[in-house]
Amino acid sequence: MSAPSPFDLNGNGHSGNGHNGGPQSLTSLGTAAARKLATTTKSVPQMQGITSRWLLRMLPWVQTSAGVYRVNRRLSYAVGDGRVTFVSTGAKVEVIPGELCELPLLRGIQDDGVLRRLASKFVQKEYKPGETIVKAGKAADHVYLIAHGKANKLKPGKYGDEQSLAVLADGDHFGDDALVESRDHWPFTVTAVTACTVLSLSQKVFEDAIKDSDTLRQHVEKFKLRLQAPQDKHGQAAIELAAGHVGEPILPETFVDYELTPREYELSVAQTVLRVHSRVADLYNDPMDQIEQQLRLTVEALRERQEDEMINNREFGLLHNADFAQRINTRSGPPTPEDMDDLLSRRRKTQFFLAHPRTIAAFGRECTKKGVYPQQIEFNGSHVWAWRGVPVLPCNKIPVTDTGTSSILAMRTGQEDQGVIGLHQTGIPDEYQPSLNVRFMGLDEKGVISYLVSNYFSVAVLIPDALGILENVELGH
Image (cartoon, rainbow, N blue to C red; front, side, top):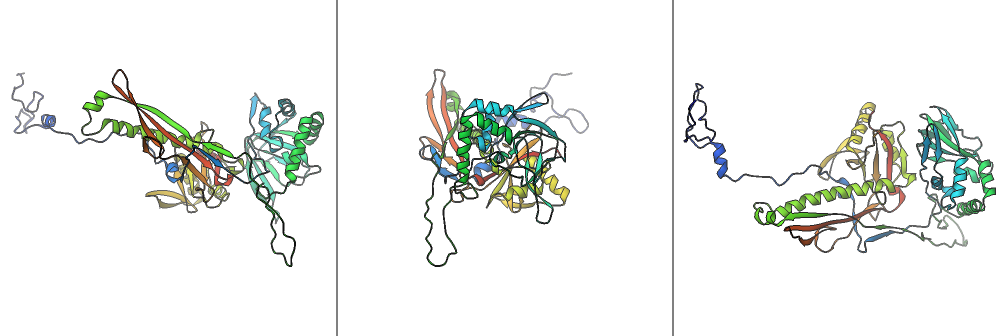
């Protein structure tokens, strides 16, 4: 083979192929060589993981100048129901003593000995699907804790049929108010939907525990007094009013009482230190500013983390701060139109649903099975599904568990509507975006420039019914 010609113009030692398969010389400059003299058209740095961040876009943001936002509410006598946690050893299930404080009757007891003795008195029982746990009209003399499984809470209807009141699942409880009432009867029936493990404590055992403990007796007496205090259907201290009267009756006197220890939300922070070598910033800034591009991608990552914290943070995240009365379970497992209606009906003026994309797909499959098709609407420049006119927005920050379950959030937003609000503070030093600043930290001995990037935020639920959650949504059906 002969040596490549020094006048070969395509730069690879071959002159190319002619029509007959033989060597042929180029008659013009090749593209590979021409590109050495050309300036490329390039994109800014691209990044995976940037999402639509619907939660940040939809929440109204409230200026929190002092770094703390206090939510003042009317005084409430009703103690919020909590979820009880259990521990299992083989097939034996026991309630964690401290978790008994989640029952309204026992909320606030400080005596660990009393809680341990009560926890040891609970009796475990297994129920098969379809079995009745309690029957309407029978004596209500036990408190029941659902350790595992799903049960339907039913009430006799006006015409003899049964109405579904709620679906009970792991950690739910009922009947604790029956422990302080004598000769009470169940107003509802509870039937196991799946195999259920239930722990129960009888009224007699509880009364014996009261006799043996002054602490428990005094606590129960205070609880009874709270139940007797005038209150509305939401458990708030009543405002006495008169209406529809004739003549000149004496009008009731009243005032609106407030909570003495309202909740305060402190702004949280997500931070990082951005480091750029001075040589890079000096020499490689054309046509794109290296520091600006580094900062742009860093801010995107911080905003993604902000949305994740606002949903999952155990202190203020929405999944952990929804009132237990506003948490419901699916009737059968996957998210059905009936489940979405139940979630929608629990508050006025629901403005949007928030769900993982896989959850939205599961809801679509259930709608297809029933021959019901959610409408598509144009919402803030995007085409999204809507249920009953309420947009269903995707959010991949809502977790999907290893067992294939997730949650759907529904919320009302805004201060005027006593909804969910975002908290931030604008006007901070070196502000780059609202409530996000970039502060120069100097150069080190290696010539590396450092910037502290900080993002301040939080989220608050003004009243309990502003936020609701459909839990234990199965995605694999």
